[in-house]
Length: 287
Image 1 (tube, one colour):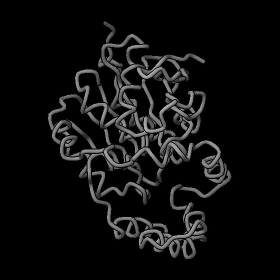
Image 2 (spheres, rainbow, N blue to C red; image 1 turned 60 degrees about the vertical axis):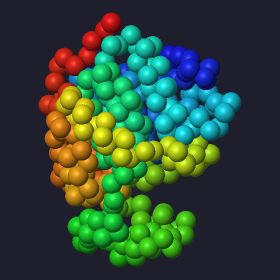
Image 3 (tube, one colour; image 1 turned 90 degrees about the vertical axis):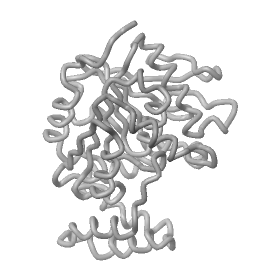
Image 4 (tube, rainbow, N blue to C red; image 1 turned 90 degrees about the horizontal axis):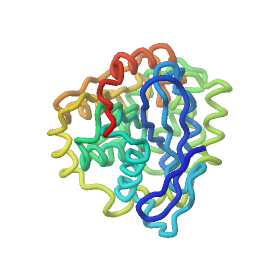
């Protein structure tokens, strides 16, 4: 397992697997061990996935300064990884909350990003609004599921700001296209894999300046993919369309029948969309 040193001296780990040009992958959670990304549905057959364990997660060390868990502070970690890999520009994939870090990195270092793939992205860094009805309308697409009624009632409680821990558990099926053993296992692993202290600090005061970030992304010239799941209540397709509209060269793909983890819900369509977008790795170069 390779490691490198962040600018503040924290030892960070990454995992490399697959064939082809490197694709740097930032996990969500926020602040969850990158192991949950796995091989991204078989994308390792086309790209060498470089999964970064964010500070304090996975095999990476816990920093001395807990304030460095803040998202904007971790931009320097991604830049240090680029330098460690010896890449002049990198192709970057980010899932969920990891998209906030990817957006800040791209805004700060636009000349260092070849292609940017945002998978069911969180929108905190760019300040988009996801309404309760956005989530509930998406959830109602699942009304024929046997678990729908209690899960929907709990989702209503979540969107109204009166949720209990039991509501979050009850609504969990909405994050997946199939509430099967694989989905249950991934859900059960989240608590073990996430650094809760780091997650609490990730989006703390000062982490994001949406106006500045949107302004920078509006000038980002390289190709961008925003991939949404048709059933994803965390990143509804309507808002993902708005996210894609922040870039001059972005495409939106809504993966049919997919939830928040589209590589689990439809491996073939997911990999096909990513391979078509990433091409042959021509955006990558070494100094």
